Image 1 (cartoon, rainbow, N blue to C red):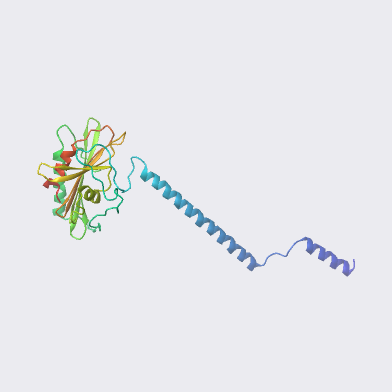
Image 2 (cartoon, rainbow, N blue to C red):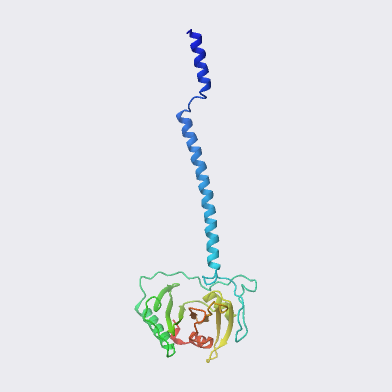
Length: 268
């Protein structure tokens, strides 16, 4: 074989084998580009996942029986007095508390405040009519004190009441150093202090004090949850009654809840 034949053979083999292998630098550059594309894909996937999570959370919050978002109250049921709506329902701005909670940290409730909370719990238990039982369950029977603002306190009291396989939850929230009463509309003030509602009416107590009574649910299989709310004298008191099931009978009437909201027993 002549030299020219060998040279021609090598040229043909080189042409059929394709381009020479990439250099190390070229391989690194290609790897960086591929990693960048993967990062972009994951970022897009994470964004879609976040949007899906928000959509699921919204559905859960809006589902019947789940926690309802704070929104302008509507009207439901037949109140015993004129039903009022909040500014949000009328198309105005959503009301806000007259003071924003700071969650003032406290290592432990002072003895005087804890004694006051215990006294509130005793008063709430004593108010339960005969024929009901109040289980001594720490999950449902409690008297807690939390810091509120710079000098105020939030007392949270709770019990469950049982009778004939029916259960009703009673809760009291009492704020000190709450601020002024806010709007002159008692239902709007109740919205600020205790949250949204389906309906609101104003009842007059035996002492002549008008009290906002709000409710949620009460149609179909949704239990009727009622709150009596008083905002006055730098205090806010909410007395709440929540039957567990749609057929559980309330322990107190709306009027009785209103009387409890003005009772000194629940004033912080």
